[in-house]
Length: 205
Figure 1 (tube, rainbow, N blue to C red):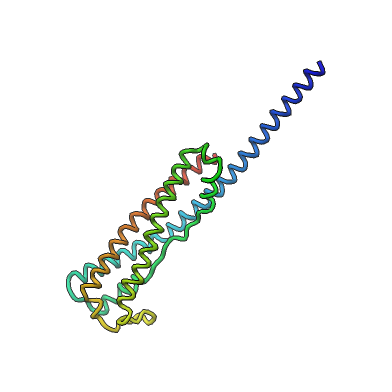
Figure 2: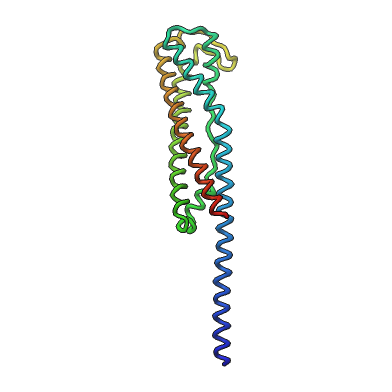
């Protein structure tokens, strides 16, 4: 009888230990998912904050390109758009919680979330790569080309010769193409962020 009681006691203690380990593991997983959700929400807010800028910069690029196609433009019209196009704003994205989750064992128990996070990372990397090249081209092509004829700190155009050249028109054509591609990548990544956020909401229920 004593042996049976000892065996039952050991079994109960072992089951309790397993239960506690699972409970602790689940709590750690919930904390990881919560941190991940906060990070995704921060990135969503970052994308939302750039919506107006993206729309504005694209409209100025298109307007300037169309005007240059139709012949020489005035300094007043150029000023209205050139100094707007100097601006560059890119998303300041968080990735620590995402990387931590993907490197954890929990990512293997939620394959759908893992796959969507990997897709999101790919899209964000593509966006960041294009954004980096876009900034470099804006500096080396757009601003450097106008450097001797535009006083950027004073927002003043000294000469219209460079602005009305075929070279500058081609620069704006390339820049407008970049804006369209950036908008496409922004839309893809934004939609993916919302999809991941929805999956996290379900996982935390």
